[in-house]
Length: 157
Image 1 (tube, rainbow, N blue to C red):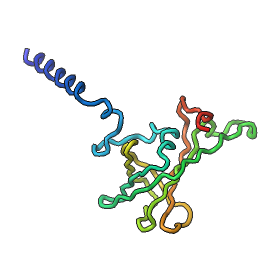
Image 2: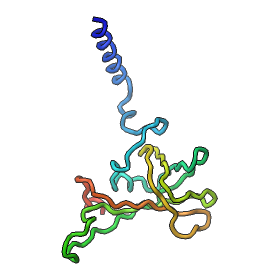
Image 3: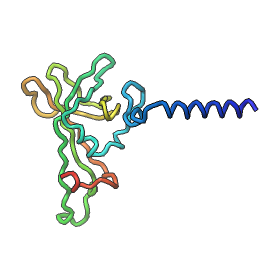
Image 4: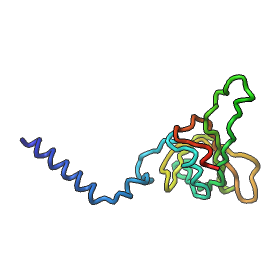
């Protein structure tokens, strides 16, 4: 009998908490929590929608570097007619993310933990590209992966 009452009490407490908490708190990943987002779930449109926003990169336990997403170029589809058979990456979303960061805080090429106000926390490999410019360094993350079923390249142009 006690277990049934405890179960009903616990369920009531959860229901009450859900009615009090604003629904907007469930739509955005929490940065302060330990939860990591999967980059697999972030398609090109999701990532490209963050151009001109700031990403925080955890280089070490004491160093966080802010990078600005400059652009997210999408590669044109591979023309299948030029090949006897379709290339192995036919139908993939192939794109890169180009970031700019401070010249005085270099980030080594590796997988780093990223934090973003809308995307949450996730891990991604970046490497430096080009020569450092006046005051900034550019970094790139490259993607070549199967496109999600709902991904339509024509909607992006």
